[in-house]
Image (cartoon, rainbow, N blue to C red):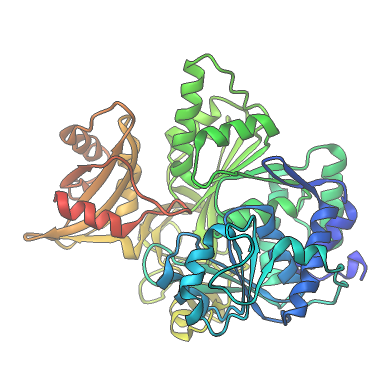
Length: 547
């Protein structure tokens, strides 16, 4: 299959890139470095092994791993066979894991050894899973107690030849499971072509046109490699989430770049900074203040200690999923000539972004809407840009086509107006006449206090701007008079005390009085998931005790 005939399919595009830049480093994980040639060869050999286990068109294979090269090798091997990879949150316990593996119809699980025991606990309740593939050193000497049909990842690669390249359809399905902030996880379905096109936007940040064919993409990526300007991207977000897998890995790979992943099991700002400096990272993928603030504190601590923090290699920092405050953005711009991209959207569809640089002042929770984005009221009627009325954002470009095995959820989130199909995930806000978006938050996080609607994220964005605050989460708590009251769980910066009256006055100077939290609850830290999103069960328990 020639490059010009290669369909928009991640496996096919990656094969073409591996042929074009075979000696380019594809991945760095600690001391492990793999070229595009080696990466493609390992994925092809694993694809042969998976085919022998019955993995073919639309077969589901679950990936229970932290960020590592094997995660993506397994995913590309699945794609090569036209199968579907299922992302599994590595924090899930027995019942949560059982639900996702059952709901996704996964027949094989590829997992890191540390997750052996939790899989063994539920294996008897997974009759549909016929094989397990283990990555990493076996703590049980390879016995695999409690798991039948167990295989070793490296052995499969070593004992199989590369799979032949095959024709694939751009309509092949990609599934991304998302739990959002509430409810059971759900599988968001998008096709391969839309997935590739969605992550070709990286070229625009280099002043290059967005590729329209695989041949265009390979030529552009080869040009970047020859010029020595292909990105070196450090992904600080787990691959189990679209920000890490898509914005981090896929966007970088489609540019022939190098993806760097962290080796620690928990986020460590010291490891992030050391990796940036050691690998001369050019791009960083984060989730807003959840990563940017601790990283900034680490930089400031080293600066006070007289240790150099040369951030001159950084050209781009991209964020999505969690609020990124303008004060923190400015602190990074003060330390380097870089572009900061803040994406707004969801797995269900991208809505807009903001761009900050030394010539473009940063903002908080303000984005530029894509031209095709509309604003809808709760009845689905279009609200004109510039009307001053809030509504729900609706996207229509490169959007998913539904939720796996859930027609009800699909009909609620993907709606057709005027013959055009939109993704309407539930985010509320305003769009000005010039396309500037102001995000209020999710309808599910809206607090009704005495008949007034308060969007939690709007209040959080203000509280976080206070000099004493490291992190904040705003929720509604029961109130005898108003039904619900606004409560802010606030984590202070190290060595700083939270003064509730001072914080209330600060918020009141920016927002209407009814939006000012009635309770300011000091906590050691805001508990978040691996994607940076808040843990609302923890938040309600903490607020219930204090309030």
